[in-house]
Length: 484
Ligand SMILES: O=C(O)CCC(=O)C(=O)O
Ligand SMILES: [Fe+2]
Image 1: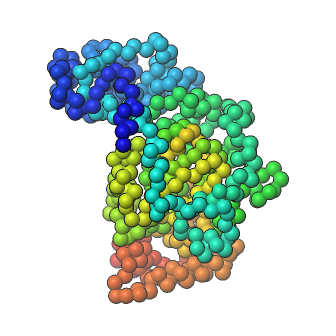
Image 2: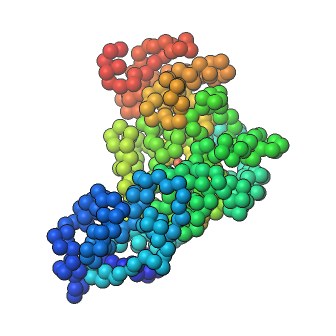
Image 3: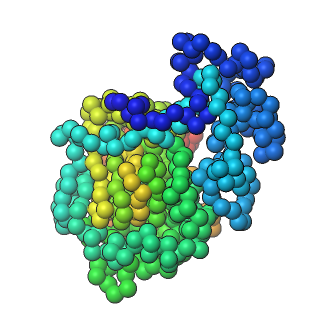
């Protein structure tokens, strides 16, 4: 790919490290003093200790330190650490922190400075992501359907990704939420975007003039309350949106007000997105044992490129993603663009890879346990919600029971979400609960001498009586197993 040709020169004329080998002149021989001998990462780590005025002073000493002290990530951290009541977004974190208009900011060329660390964010910001979302091989394409009924979903599609093109087009929020309308109605409503809580109008200013390699992503779990929306049933008067009917019942609804976070408003500019992860009960967390909640993600504006992989004991995680032995930690230190640059070509050829673009008015199904990376091809507005379909009741019970620390969003007062859930299910859906327990018990019957690793991990067969009076059990960890 020749994206490189579309990348403009770095604003301070910094070049990639490799260029130093053929360059006639290296700035580090004349500038930077003792700092010039240090690795780039070390220089940045030292600068991370400084406050804004010290950073400015260090940056005024020489060209090398001027370029390093201008790294926008340093200023982003400073800005986020210091709460600002009132500020104007000025296109970069440095200018915003210093409240500098663009034309008042110095731009001293640092020709002869070669640094991947300084050049890479600039390169990634200006690398087009569109080529990665095109020419999707036929066998990789996420199936696209107009609509589905519940029966087809639960009997065939429940564990497969797909894109539905019709149901969301009926939603009032799809028909009414232009960026203008959103801004008119919610300008002063404060939404969460990663580490900041900003009024919507500020986030829109940021979105319109953003040069971050990984833009701050608005991801708000309380949007329904903040925007005073009614989540209804299909066609219901005053309903802002409803769950597409094919996904059927959501057995987490029995938790009512005690339900953990389950829905998010997602807004971001082009290139914002989510690096590889699997969803458990909440977004951006990884759950053990491959048990996680399915979700749907409806695009109301813009479009998203999705690349997905099934999870399986026999398959490694997607290229460029590293998982700890117990699967509780995922390391994917790369930004979305870095991952696309480095691993997309290999991923596309990897067994199980599925890709697709979910466009405006479409909804994508993320089955339980699937890895996914998502990137917005244009600015986008989406709603996502996770749910527990019938077929995943047993798995979600196991998850709550075995990994309470990875269950996010339950109120602190709920000491044992598992017990609460069993209780509620017993009151409302006793037959389903019994079926789920029977499933769990069946998973314990070894079909062969060699138990599946997954079963060994989650179920040791000792008997315990739960609050609901059902008799069954599985150990949480080895110590429990020893006591059994
Ligand atoms: O960026 C997106 O829309 C995807 C979000 C996502 O994967 C999630 O909510 O878990
Ligand atoms: Fe996700």
